[in-house]
Image (cartoon, one colour):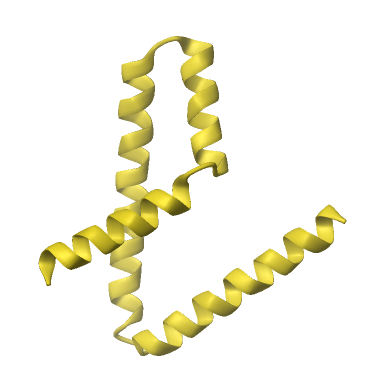
Amino acid sequence: MFWKTVFTTFSMVFLAELGDKTQLATMLLAAESRALWPVFVGSAGALVLSSFMGVVAGEALTRIVSPQVLKSAAGIAFILLGIVMLVRRG
């Protein structure tokens, strides 16, 4: 169960981060500064901290709201954001 959760989480976060604005900002910082290791350490630290905050917030929310409700709310939020992005682009 532990490794299944690790693999699932890694896969979802990795795929979600590919090509997003965080990755683009990191690429720009690396190209601009030519200091690859400091940019890597800074961006990796930021991702670890934001992931930690997500885990803590998610655990706290499950004390108030059921995981199924959270899952449905997250799905609805993603759909609404997608619609907003499509409308703004057009």
